[in-house]
Every structure is written in C-alpha cells, then in structure tokens.
Length: 179
Image (cartoon, rainbow, N blue to C red; front, side, top):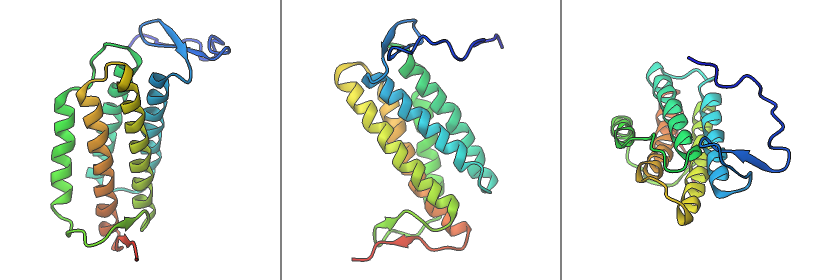
C-alpha cells in the first residue's frame, strides 16, 4: 500500500475549511462534512464497542461493518463517487434476519442498558441515527446514493437487535420501559 499521508498536521484547515477527496475545499460545517464526521464518529463508537468481550461472530460482524462504514465515508468524501454497494445493504438485511430470529417478540419499548456491551450497542444505534439524519440533510441539496441512506437505516436497526442479543447472551433481560 502506498503512503497516503506523510504529514498529519498540514495546517490547511486552520481557517475553517477542509479538503475533500476530489481536491476541492469546503467549510468544515458544510452538510457533507457534518455527515462525514458523524459517520466517522459512528465508526469510532463501533471500535469502542469492539473492545468489549463479544461473541466471536458479533465481533467479526462489527469488524466488517467498520470497513463498510469506511467505504461509506469515502463516498461522502468524494462527491459523485460510488463506494457503497447494494450488496452491503443486503449483508445487513441478512444479519438482521439472522440475529432477530433468536429473539422474543417485543412487548414493550426497550431502554438502553443491560450489560455494558448492550449499552454500547445502544450508543452505536443512536450515533448511527444521527449520522443517518445528517445524510438526509445532505441529500436535500446534493446527490446521496440510495445504498448510503439504506445502510445507515439498517445498521441502526441491527445495533438495536444486537443489544438484545448481547443482553440475552449475558443472561440479562432487556430493560423495559415502564408506563
């Protein structure tokens, strides 16, 4: 792999702009950068989540998702570029079906919590929803591919399901909302 960055502190952003992958510069608070930053934060949350002791299959799943999110970020970083494919959305659909199959039906709303790994899944879920909202805002004025929106929507659902799976694996109940 070629060296991509030799200098990290370039000082080119000192005046409030940042560079995109196509070489153009935009304001650091532009909707594209907000969406990109929220996706980056989501990927960081997944990295934190993966420091927990997780079932091997869940850890491998989250590792693959981190790579997908990097693809998604690459797409956001280069206007007009396609990096996230419908197959990656399908991958999440299949994971959702697989992990949801072993769970009981929901009888009530669930609060974030339970074991630590499940609580971190809820942090990832809510961070993912924010990233999804930022992508929707970006899509109002600029082209955003359907798979990007779909991926974030499915991923937040998967994080919710995985929170339940992790609580179940830890022998803990979901934290139910009480009226």
